Image (cartoon, rainbow over all chains, first blue to last red; front, side):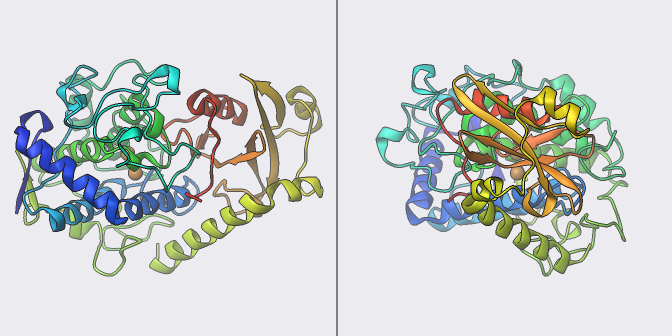
Length: 276
Length: 134
Ligand SMILES: [Cu+2]
Ligand SMILES: [Cu+2]
């Protein structure tokens, strides 16, 4: 069982091991399969139709399984690697996370926000974007974006989200007016998960967001907040329970995995990893 | 929801996307799309929003209403929006609260397809949208 740490607490050795495993996964072609899986899922999710990965209750268990498979793929390369998480309430644009020994910096405006240094810069040759939702063959970042998003979520925003004691509410999509899931996903309430995608912007704004390695650290923090919520409300659980059109009920199989991968099967992560 | 429903819909959506990527402009030319020349005129002609044709930051952005079978709106009937940037289709879907979301700004909602198209141009710079990692 692995321990997922705050990225700011990784040692230099752990930072280097994480970066090396990412680059090896990319070289093998496995990384791009994960990106494709996310684009396929994002294409299929809509408020009025089937929705599994986004704008739906299974946003959290779907990404928990997605991250778990990704982490296992990294561990097949180096068993010492665990996913780190990015706590954006304490680490912003000046975080050491963006140093050139780790995820690399913001993009350069004069080069259409291309990331030009660090392990994932185009010039290094390690990180060509091949599975994409736009024509950029290189990683792009544009902190605060084009979206008017100027701040990352605060600790106060996280408190507001964690104060939602009900997991999710009808109509179980992006218009759900309350509930932990939609507050955390960000279509209602203080906007947490969506806002971080828009703050990083560039590659992170679109369907192909997993092409930016920071995707995994962002979603790892989202997953940690779900874990925190689960401990805070032990009597609450995933909703809906049964008979809901277009939505994954607690005991229904989640695509693309199917079989025994249900929201209920994802609730207890402690056999696979814990958070430090 | 059953497993079959989910898998079937995903496959269908992907097939539609492939179809659109290759035939979108041809279909439009053949008249299957209702094309209007400006939003004001479009609003006078049809109640549905989302038809426009303008130059924004040097890019030609167009929006039409197309039958849902050819749209990626996720709806199962009626018309859905279709957006192009310099002829490249931008995946757009209609949300439950009447807003729109695109593949370039997947984590944002826009009041109109035109607003979504303009933000996509802001985000893309000189790049273009692409379908499903092709
Ligand atoms: Cu996602
Ligand atoms: Cu996300």
